[in-house]
Length: 234
Image (tube, rainbow, N blue to C red):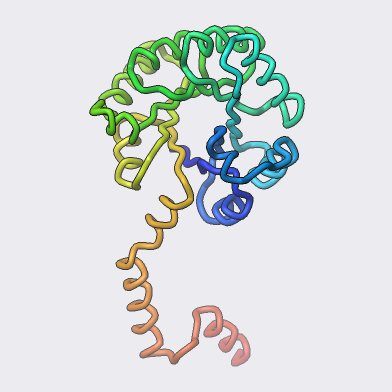
């Protein structure tokens, strides 16, 4: 499983790169908007320096015609690095551009996927990742899990290296469901990670463990301090 952060907020990336096995970072124009009018390429290079060369960085184009999409893609690659996955919505123009970019062996993430058919077309066009929008599909009364499951079957049938990068989540339950349906990767906001790891029940369990420990060994005593005290005795 790959866990990605759907954000280019540097503080959030710095926080979670040290906490979870962060496989990469995803962005789109709406996510960029949250950061304000930034120096985009400088900012993306800072993101890369935080996540490292082995993590995947997914950056979305803005142009909506094939020539423009390809130009956007090359601008991103030239100003960040050639390992970036270019995010392209699965439209007529997007599919045309995906085919062109894959002929150049450029990494592509097919995004804004709302249906199995879109996913099938992106798979055939050679996309490296396919990003179905889980919550948005649910809001449209589309069975998100069924879409992911059928895409996973198609990938398996064709022995394809394409991965499903599930996106658009409102809670951790949806993330779990996407993985269970066959997604190999999921990208989520920092709020979902914070909520998942900050459950009151988790905090209560930790507090109970601490109270039991301190009832025996004393307040503030840790395992490492016991070891250090034993060293002194020796």
